[in-house]
Image: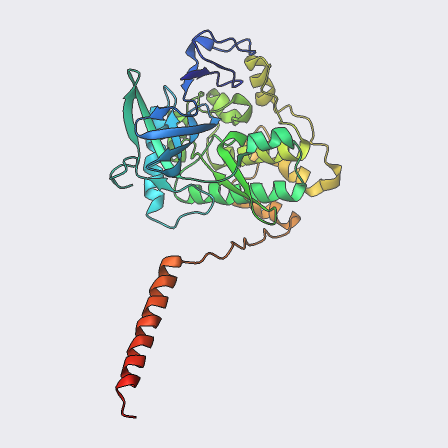
Length: 358
């Protein structure tokens, strides 16, 4: 296993990790599995993304490709809570922009084994297993294309906003929205189809402050009311409006609203608490820019009160998201059964005709 810095993704084969971030606790770097290594009965194919709370891998279990999420030290309770929330959501309709949870144990069920744990290198490691998904992490996509076409940016946000609204209706707030937790697949016509890989705190709004941990995400993507709870501002659905606004701002402006690399964390926090961000500069998208910048206001009361209000303001500025036309797939098993039945009927008819007098 290697070691990885969760601030800048620097990796090393030993414990002597040097990080470009001046205030990085390098001695607390997280272990990361490499391609070809094994996590119990699961073969690691490659790491996908190192979140602050977990690392997500492409993996293989019993010849079947899967997504594997392993909690980072100190974030085990978050993963357990997330798995239980997925377990509850699985009992209702499956949302198309959420991954499908699989049993942690091959012979188990989601009801019995929504998450698993095993001891690796003397340390307990908690994990979840999901159906395999094609796509690219939004953060990596933005490194190549920092300023996507505005319609694609809008469609990504509207899709993720619909997912977050769905979570709110089930009684959960996210609070950890950032480009690392979104997987984007482009269909045959190039339309982005995002999936939210992480449920954040997965807690009711009244428990948000208690469940919150500043190791769950970067300060640059954290709502101000979470960074300074001493101001006694309520933490609720407006915090996720803030997160959605930050994502849209970053894609429109081609840069984050608050820089997070090589920035002193205290100075960064001061800028966030003061609400000091530059305008997006998208004068070609007047309404969209105004909506985005309203969503990331310092005071929760100055934002949209909930995700539905944010979506209602944003949606008229974009064409409807095209329906996906999936390629037609032949069910060979059913086809063979039908052909066999037709062949049997044909033979019976021919046999009957052969018995008729001539």
